[in-house]
Image (cartoon, rainbow, N blue to C red; front, side, top):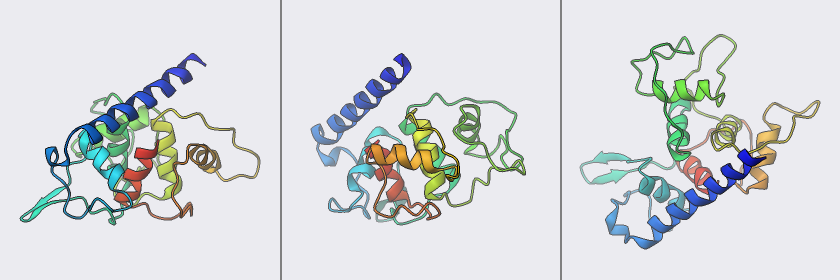
Length: 195
């Protein structure tokens, strides 16, 4: 129980610090993304991740872009989640998955997530880092990364049901709750911000 209290306190503290950074510093202190206007539905989440240093966007000739409508893959999701949750990133030379090598940019994130049971991969020993992440997978990784308690899985429920219950309780999910829908970069930022 004491660990859960510490996790809750840390989550509140992190949100407080992010809020201070966003609202106390003028927006000009951070390079804004050209494709994320202030009235964008996910602007607060995206700006919070940028302020935290979790995302930098993509530099083009006319400025920085975030591409909020672009679908996010499994490797990118782990990077966002682990950096946002301030998880200590581990390094090793042994890969837990046959399709992830120590030379891949995302290796430390996948390795850390595997060691912390945030991800388990597929029965064939792969992680499929380039696959688009679906909502059920993203919520599982999100809830687990931030150590949010989940209810027990009931007989007959799909594997992801407890993660949806936990995310609903925290008002993390978005309007479209289709478990198999691909998650966009903007949606990922919004859900992380809400936790």
